[in-house]
Image (tube, rainbow, N blue to C red; front, side, top):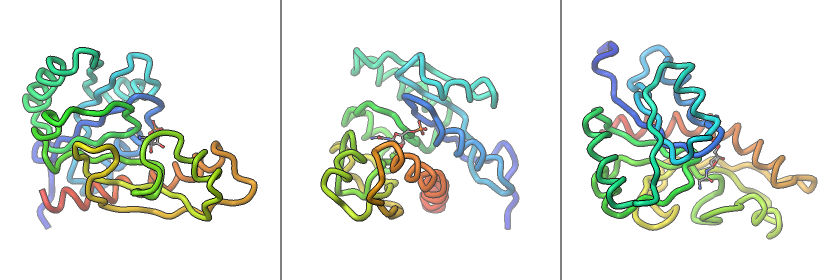
Amino acid sequence: MKKLNGTNKINIAVFISGKGSNLKNLIKHSYAYNSKFRISLIITDNSKALGLKFAKKFHIKKKIVNFDNTKLVEKNLVMFLKRNKISLICLAGFMRILSKKFIKNFNGKILNIHPSLLPKYKGLNTHKRAIKNKEKFSGCTVHLVNSKLDSGKIILQKKVKIFKKDTPKSLALRILVQEHALYPKAVKKILANL
Ligand code: GAR
């Protein structure tokens, strides 16, 4: 098998808005033996995102983007990503909807992780709604991003049982553990076909 060195690894940009535990986990996997990718950019819409600390800790370039003027900002962001030779974008707790135009520029190359078994529970408050509806299972999904919210092709999913005593918080924590197992696997699967 061809050994990858630092220069021929695939560059990934991770977009975050908050804690960044999925980001940290992807960084950890990027350091694994024979990993084919590196996290070379962290993009956020939130200058206070806790996950930004991983940029400093792991010496990764970061960019804080004010998405309010979407058109212009996204145009500049596309150029910035292309300049940095980004081949794949991973949304990881990124709480913004990207424009059709932006998505077209990276068609088939934007992944998102969502804390439900899509197509069920698109959008926000997934755990609260699943518990309220007395679902027996929830879980997480990694999917390709298209122009409709949480609707692109599903790459991988993991089911998680909901217990009677679960609160949205306890369920979220159990699902997050599975997200950390799922996202790197989905990235590998996508990279194999890039
Ligand atoms: C994760 O649970 C992720 O699935 C969810 O936000 C959390 C981010 O956690 N994403 C969404 O709800 C997107 N619709 P993290 O910042 O610790 O990775």
